[in-house]
Amino acid sequence: MKTPRASGPAGPARTLGPMAKPLEAWTPEELRFEIGRLAEELASRAAAPAASAGKSRGVDVVRACENWVRGRAWDETFTEEMVEDELSVHERKAGQELPPLERERLLQLWLALHGERYREAA
Image 1 (cartoon, helix red, strand yellow):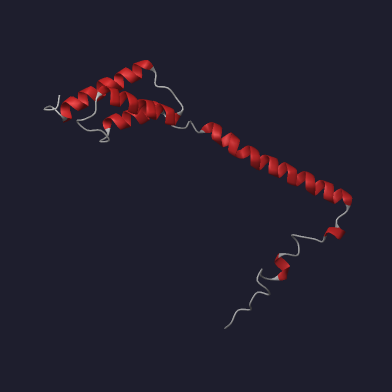
Image 2 (cartoon, rainbow, N blue to C red):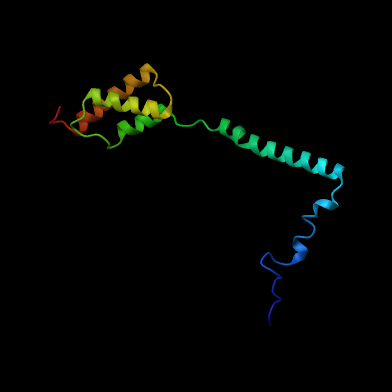
């Protein structure tokens, strides 16, 4: 049994009928109301991303730097100066500065990990 095909590329005409009416059929009051409703909807849509963006905390620079130190992105050729530079790169990317105590803690962590991984290079 064949099902009846939709008329035209947009489907049956009855789906479009109630959604739109010709401009001549609108009264000035209906147009004002519809324009106001659309403006309110657009304003609420524009405000929604800004409200949700406030909830996002972005990148945590301390966590990003600690992940780099604990990771395998460095080898025995790295020096403390190179690690300092890398931490600065992470700070610039995150748009945040590492607190001095966190920076010192991460350097001490790197020194300990470097000593464990590369005893002969130390």
